[in-house]
Image 1 (tube, one colour):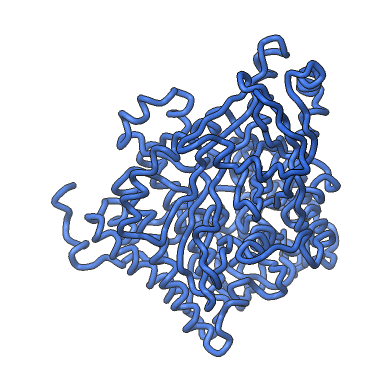
Image 2 (cartoon, rainbow, N blue to C red):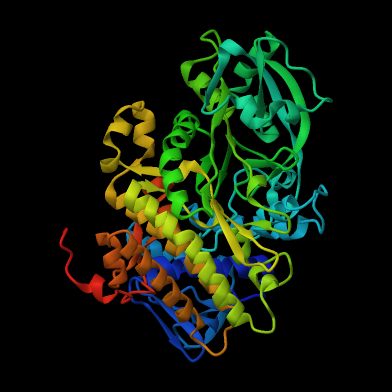
Length: 598
């Protein structure tokens, strides 16, 4: 048996306590709940770590239908000798989780606990450094939108190290969305014959409003050249890289590439860090950034630069068809990408490829056309985020009617799921298109009363085509693109079901249930409402087998964020565990009959 050495309990800081609750939530979802090692007793949730013989507990604020419980105070560990309970901090909890996962999997991971603690330290730095006011004053609806993008203080609620980042804190403070910053980009001028560009429906400069971004104060782009925007931190990272820096410097010194410097209109970092938004021009730029955030190095690979534009072109027809029935749902396009492709005289093929990807930028369309006067655009994740910088439990609680929060939440939820669930399932079932509608990939347009009016999905990096439904289309694409944008049937269902129901709606339902914790049971009511929407959508789609199974009670798939981090594997290789199906049994009488098609 592996027995970690526990130090004496100490009073946890806000960052430590928040991080401990998050890690405990990962343990519940991926290990304790699927293994049946969890139960409620006397106002506490108890978890057994069976492989090391340890018992944990946490005081419950609210019991969740789907085990997304709310906790209060420090997590406790039972002393094996005396049976007494002792408070433990994040370091001690991480040690216990490390020991359990080591014994469970037979694998060691000496990085895991360090990443968990580093994430806590980043959170503490954010809490300390976050200013009371943003760097720039801008008008609505852009001010509320940027505020929501820059409000994810604690990050992903079901990731063991949601604020783990490579690079030092000083650099992060300059470019982190949580510090409410804004900054101009670093611009290069690239000869037209060296420009790597993909676009649809107009060129890169048209989609990016390049002339407006550079502004009159910026140096002119010489004739025969095109402007290339680069994240200023990325430019510094590439310039100081031992392998790539000399190659880039040589191209600038020779005059092959012109360095225009950091100039032009300021951009605001959004929740993804590397995607930047310029409100005066209503332009998003998804830049490359060679830093690791949670699991991945955030750079634009060549297949992503080309794939985003190809998907924009391919999805226009199915999205237009879906919009006929669901006019208040859309996907923000990514119609252009640009980078620099140095000639063979500079560096090795590997170095030139690394610079092409490291300098690559994708344009995403803006939000201005989707919000009428009096309406606001919010990142979905900001509505459920805790701790909430507004000082309340969540931003949903700021919007709610204090006189009758339950009635308000019920109406809000009905509108929200009707706006989002039918079009997403229709795209999957009828068109073989799998969007990735997790909390950071959905924007909600809200009216003056806070009620949902429209849903804007985004980020084509996670958007896929079901291969069996798009054989000819995929065959016509270059292999590196077709391989990157295709899912098989199982992959497609797991991704849409996880992102929509588990990552997104489970967290939103929990935040709404928090508005009316007494009497208990409101979360069940919300899931019943969602089950009705799924049943109606299933009927309209001809009762696809997977929706029929879902409505019959088959568990949902939950992505294993903690276990994939433990295994140190690529995020795309993450597995799934069974997640409680909160609306099983919602089949209508018609849906209960055996299908004639299957």
